Amino acid sequence: MDQFTQNYVDGFMADLMAKNPGEKAFHQAVKEVLESVAPYIVEHPYLMDQKIMERIVEPERIIIFRVPWLNDEGEVQINRGYRVQMNSAIGPYKGGIRFHPSVNLSIMKFLAFEQTFKNSLTTLPMGAGKGGSDFDPKGKSDNEVMRFCQSFMSELQKHIGADTDVPAGDIGVGGREIGYMFGQYKRLRNEFTGVLTGKAIPSGGSLIRPEATGFGAVYYVVEMLKSFGDDIKGKTFAVSGFGNVAWGTVKKVNELGGKVVTISGPDGYVYDPEGIKLDIVKDIKEVKRGRISEYADQVASATYTADENGSKGIWTIPCDIALPCATQNEVNLDNAKSIVANGVKYYVEVSNMPSTNEAIAYLKANGVIVAPSKAVNAGGVAVSGLEMSQNSMRYSWSAEEVDEKLKMIMKNIFANSVKAANDYGLGDDLVAGANIAGFVKVCEAMKIQGVAY
Ligand code: NDP
Image (cartoon, rainbow, N blue to C red):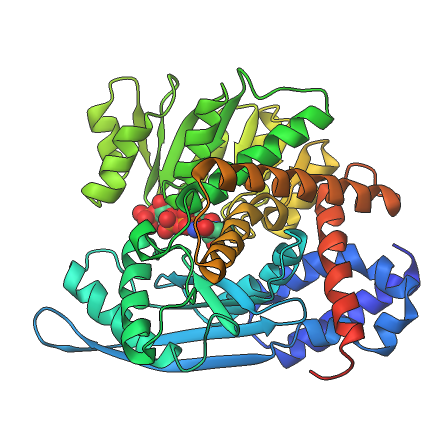
């Protein structure tokens, strides 16, 4: 990066940090994108004149609200709800809802910011948003989760709509939570529209949506391996997490002839050299809503390692391809060193911002091919976009039709990222390629629409 561009990045980050103090995850996400797109910005003076990047980092609107609810003992509980409506240049705000005790404004803003480029990469007309609450569904009864979701939606419904803002699931928000929120939305607004995606099939959901993020990630891996003259068959994968995304990923890797040997929770990880058995994982997660250690109790070939450090030990397990699928910053510099020491050739981010910027720099510097989450996990929001289309048409596509469209979208995301990297002389830098490809479309839409927002 030349000195002029470096000064631009440094000045921009200093302003951002002064204006958004303490929002570390948001600073990290902006810095990662800015370093990729800064050369493009300085080459196109209108972007600087129009302060496009300065506008992109400023959410169009943030809604923060009280979520009161009653637990099963009749005691009043209070959580905080958020919706960050980040960017509507290319479509209605779109992005998931996260229920996790770690949720705060910084996390919401980093996720909404990432969503801007991810949604653009899908080529579907979707703007960006993200929402959630510090509510923890873990250990709550179904009735408690229902009362919380109803209270959350009682406020959120004032700010969303099928053509305004269309939330979906994320960590802690699956089919159950979406169902309760959709029911409450309908009751209050008296309309049956595609206001939420990730709905169950009888409520207007799309086939393949629950699997879409994981399936899409593996379709991306297939394209990536093909481009390096490689193949998924016989490859060993280390996967972290055992939620919705990890599940879809493991299912598709198994189908295509690879082998996943790990899964994890916040308290530890499981290593099964014979390959993770998905039916057992699904039963623990969705039926028993239990802990990951139960897998090793049931499967003789598996071992469970308790790990108070957020399961980071998982990255010491030998594999060909590392696939973090749990949460942000689950891979730090030390973990990146273990990954390199293990001879891993491909590091594919599936969860949002799973790696610290230092970890990415170390992996790249040591010859590991890094695939960025905003491209790899875009299949989830892409099929949400397809759910919106089906809802608008009052029609449903077959699983094969949705899967075929998903495959095509992931193929195009990979191709467009490679093209952007090549156009800007960045070789096989898939991270910079995805950032630039996603950024350009949003910039053009903002330019056309004037300084309206
Ligand atoms: P889930 O809540 O279904 O699963 C998250 C999983 O990660 C759970 O198994 C959770 O364990 C585990 N986990 C949480 N914190 C840690 C930690 N510190 N260390 C190890 N494991 C941890 O969420 P999703 O699968 O939906 O989301 C996973 C990631 O993918 C997130 O980054 C999300 O933003 C991203 N994503 C999700 C999409 C979707 O369609 N759902 C779309 C695009 C991205 P436990 O349940 O025990 O807490």
